[in-house]
Amino acid sequence: MEYKSLSGEVKIPALGIGTWGMGGEFSKDYSSDKKDIFALKTAISLGMTHIDTAELYAGGHCEELVGEAIKNFDREKISITTKVWENHLKYDALIQAAKRSLKRMKIEYIDLYLIHWPNPNVSLKETIRAMDFLVDQGVVRFSGVSNFSLSLLKEAQGYSKNKIVANQVEYNLLERAPEKELLPYCQEKDIMLVAYKPLARGELAKPGYKLLDFLTKKYKKSLAQISLNWLISKPKVVVIPKASTIAHLEDNLGAVGWRLEKEDLRKLDKNFTP
Ligand code: NAP
Image 1 (spheres, rainbow, N blue to C red):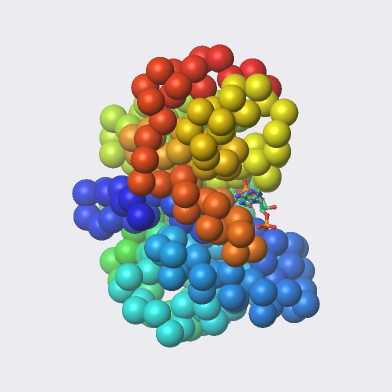
Image 2 (image 1 turned 90 degrees about the horizontal axis):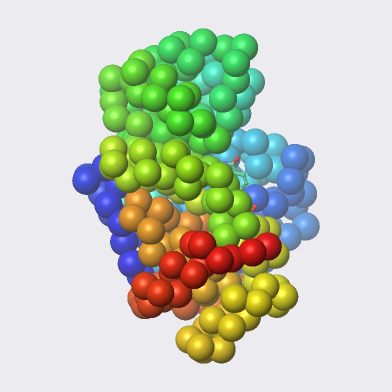
């Protein structure tokens, strides 16, 4: 596994694991529990020790699955990101939401707690004050945000006593918006850009993009491996592809430990045409 430094304090794997859809989508669905727990345990065993979940996912059941999957691993070696939903951004509501997440995952602390989406109806200052409280109490190790524009990220930084260490946003070969101003800012300020939907929900693992198809042949790597390697090659970017089959997990693992050549990275940067 390759690691990247989170705020110069801890290392997290460049390749983590996403969980959207595990345990259901917006409500609880227990039908795939065994398969999902097995996938998560396998991911951890393969070194994907950064697990991304959220209180929203499967009405909380996804966090329960994460708790079940990690219970026999060394907690210190696992980084758990979870996110507070936009209806719990007031001071007391956020603190209670974090406590419920802890309970569902049967853990003592959250490694990285993110504001899932900004909510213009709640004072960001108040939300950040609650995040600071959780960090001060040791309930949360690091605080961060998700789906924040550069201006909102800066606003959050202005209110926060503790460092905002990450912004989780959609970023992949087809979605380049973060490159304009967010990524350069994160790189300059040592903020991790956690790329969600790094495979564009599986779209980038399907043939049909000429340059990607060409590179798979040149490097003898899969489409997913090329797509993820391009992201990981960028400073301050880590990825959290969701995979629930062992074949996909093993395939994604092949995205780390090597680098596309500079010229090919440049081609993907400039000439990748959806
Ligand atoms: P994604 O990771 O881009 O794609 C997941 C899809 O790709 C799944 O259908 C998966 O199939 C498939 N896949 C995985 N590896 C593959 C491979 N090697 N070859 C072919 N297909 C492969 O999309 P995502 O799940 O939406 O995003 C990743 C994570 O980011 C989420 O799970 C969630 O934790 C987080 N997220 C956060 C936000 C936010 O607002 N902060 C929004 C969206 C997502 P199988 O499941 O069948 O293996």
